[in-house]
Structures are given as structure tokens and as C-alpha cells.
Image (cartoon, rainbow, N blue to C red):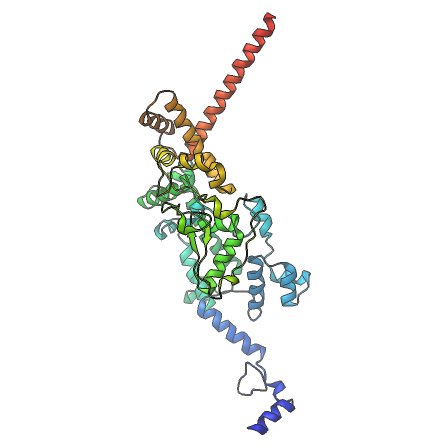
Length: 415
């Protein structure tokens, strides 16, 4: 054994031993053998691709591109020059440009579509382009080298396969978008066809519209956008299988009231496997009030509400276990609702709160004020009610400005 080990260290006999071998460990696999085995694996999983043995390198480059890896890093990893990389390996899609012109942030994973959460029922999807499934079966059979007479295709057709995948995706998008648009555009020609008039459509459209009326972004996305350091800690927490306790108050959660909002996003110190010293430090803002002394509840997003009465109860009493918005405003001003997303939600709700308070100040009871706004809403979404109230307020301002101008002109003419 010692002699064998010495020979392995001293000689170069082992240099030519191959990792993937056949009957002879010194003989590399032929390209034909690699191709046949790769084709067999692709056929077993129903994969059709132009590239065969080279596909893993191309797929790896595209996966890195999808997750935001720079072209320089991808080129370095694959030892490609920029021209070869862009022409032969990447998708040719300007992803950041596409996100920005679509109205989202340029950062990957930094946007959320509420309607996209709702997957249309399979029975509803099959009513659009119902021939998709039959042709997909032929393409899957072709991946197993089946010809037309055997239920497959006589030739590979990557463009056709890609077109079917696109249609399958687009019919989901079409159903989700039309469900969200139907209350606003009920006379669109689409809604006169059978797929949009059955019980499957009615149930699906109702669920989409209920979520779109008062859309809320996931807490994980809000954490990533507002507190990226905390989001990194959450990811690290998952990797190390430790625990981060979320509380609704800055500072020590042990002294916070039991009614702390469930949507708080501030981490409480939790057991760390390597001791407290291993926690990454998050430097506070130089101008910020010390967290332990502030005791300010931090709410990341407002809960879903579906009626004007619920909006008013949210202001006066609180909903979903949270405190009354009125008391939060009186005690903390704007400090309890940081972040652009929360500010936008609050400002839209405030339009309804202000309208209700104005009606009550003019002598209406709470119930009468709520009924008046529900009548103005007329069965439409709460977002639509906000738009109507804003339009009415603008007309009132323009009318008052016109009256003031007329009075000023009258005074000037009498001088």
C-alpha cells in the first residue's frame, strides 16, 4: 500500500485517468456517446432544445443573468468574450429596461402584482385556445423521438414549442387582467364570450377583484425595500435555522404593549448560535431618535377593508387587531408609517376619512355619513370612491377660486 501511494505521488500515471469513463478508465467518452446519453435524458423529462451537450453552460449563463449577475462576472466564469456571450448564451432581453418602462423598479424582485397571485382554474384556462394541450402532448412525444404517426412530430420545432409556452402563459395573464378590469370596463367585447359568463369565471373574477380593491404588498417585499439590512438578516436566519422575532415596537419588545401591530418590522434580539457578538451591526441614522427611547409602533401596510364602515372603524377603533389610526396620528404624527408604500396607502385612505369627518362636522351622524359615501360609491371599488372624492374636492376648489376671483374683480371695479 505504501509503495502504491508513493508511486501515485511520484509518478504521473494517474494524470490521464478520466472522471467519466467507459470500459477503459484512460479513454475519454466519445462525443457521440455524450450526445446519445444527453438526448436520452432530455427525452425522459420531455425537454426539447436546440443545444444538447452544450445546454448546461448556456442555461447556467442565463440563470445567472436572470438573478442579476453582471455580464463581466458571467464572462469571467465561462471564459467568454462579450461578443460570444451576448450572441450565443444570453437571452437578448434587456431585463432592467423592460422593468422600468413597464412602470416598476429596475431592481429584480422589487415589484408585486396582486392579481397575479390568483391562478385561474384549469377548467377556465382550457376554454381559451383549447388546442394547446393536444399540441403540447405531441411536442413532449417528439422529445422522446416519436414521429407523427406515433403521436409526436416528424421534425423538431423549437419555435412552435416556444409559441405554445407563450400562449399558455398569456391565457393566464389575460384572465387575470380581464378579471381586474371588468368592473371598470364591463362593456368590453371579451365579456360577451362564453369563458367570461360561466360560474368558474364569476368565482375567479370575484376573488381577484376583492384583492385588487385594496391591494397590499407582501411583508417580505416591504422589508426588502424599506429595510434591506433586516431582509438580509431574515435570509441569514433561514440559512442558519435561527429565529428572528418580529415585533411592532422599536426597542425592547418585552416592554411593548400587547396590542403591538402584527405588521411591525423591527427585529427583537433572539438567540444567536455564535453569541450576540456575531450579529451584524446596523448603524442608526445620526439624526434618528434612539430606538429604545421612542417606543413608536411601526406599521408596514394597512389591512384590507371592503366597506366605508370598515374604513371609518379603522380610523376610530382599529381593525384586524391594530390600534386606531386616529390615536396613532395624534401620538406619533407620521413617524409610525415610514416608507413610500405605506405613505401612498395612508394618503388614499385619508381621502375617505377626511370626507367622513367633514360630513359629521356638518351635522351628519356617523351612520348617515357612511351611507352617503356608500351611495356615491354605488357598488364600485373603494379605490374608485377615492378617485371620485378627489375629483369632487378639485371641483369644489375650482369653484371657490372662481368665486374669490369674481369678488376681487367686483371690489376693483368699485374703487
